[in-house]
Figure 1 (cartoon, rainbow, N blue to C red):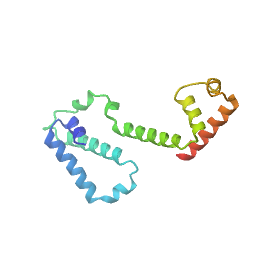
Figure 2 (figure 1 turned 30 degrees about the vertical axis):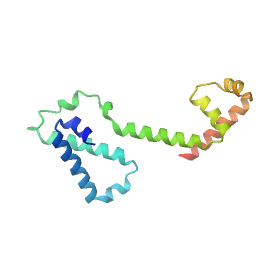
Figure 3 (figure 1 turned 180 degrees about the horizontal axis):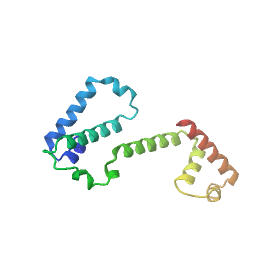
Length: 145
């Protein structure tokens, strides 16, 4: 968290203070966190927003928003990165719950980009079996979310 604040504020002590103030605020207002589903993403967003606020309110400390304008927005969109990683982890957990044969066929199809025909030949099963296993896998994965 401090590293993210340091990126925006360019002052180590200001960054430490900002993050500490955020945690004090969260400690004093725990009801806010009960609604949060993704705590890491919430914290990164809170730090980023507090940095923006500090920059906007302190023109003497920071000359302008030029610090932020030169960086692509997506470069430090930690929220999206964390959410993507969590979804990926959830997907892998769900795939691990599939029966072995179903899992093998699904992985070959979705991650190895093999066609149904190629999978059927590789595993010595019919194309219809591959279709059925993929269908079963997708049905289970839809329920998992």
